[in-house]
Image (cartoon, rainbow, N blue to C red):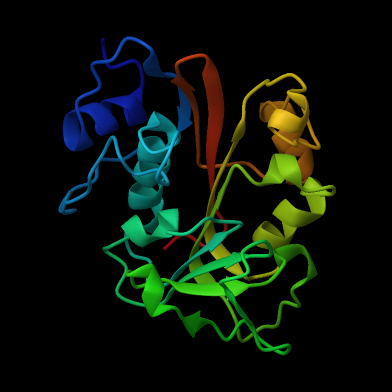
Length: 235
């Protein structure tokens, strides 16, 4: 398989060798400068949560986005995550890493006035797991994260425009990496998606027209996903 685009070449040459014929980056747009000086001690090809998503390529591409634009990050949060969180692979970040989601009973409730994450040693990682609904969380000026990650979440929420703009327009995030299903039809109860046929135009509308710094269309077998990164306050 040839190197189709800049970020695809980065993933292949600098991070992993992509040899399976049903895994590719179909298109990428944006500034994908070389990842000079970064340590690559990651299990690429196995970054997803345990189970059917563990070996999916779009996690590798998302981590490449995070490395390119969040390599100077000192803190990170994953919004709408499973345990263990994908953000745990951001091992270059020396500061706080947080996972916030409304649907895991084992997560600890946050303080009503702030995120105030609670360490969960049972997760066996350095991520703070918090039980909270990001769409309802109050944002105050004292809380912000250098890197925000939101993987396969926006298609599930009833107001994805408000959800995404909360990441982009409130000062809560400096760099945002998201992934969404790309042009998926309604898959019913199997997926429980609220929004279908998502593409670049739909996400642009959700964002209020904010221009991303990098977009990648990633194919895993028959499923295609869109990975997008925004740099609100470049690090």
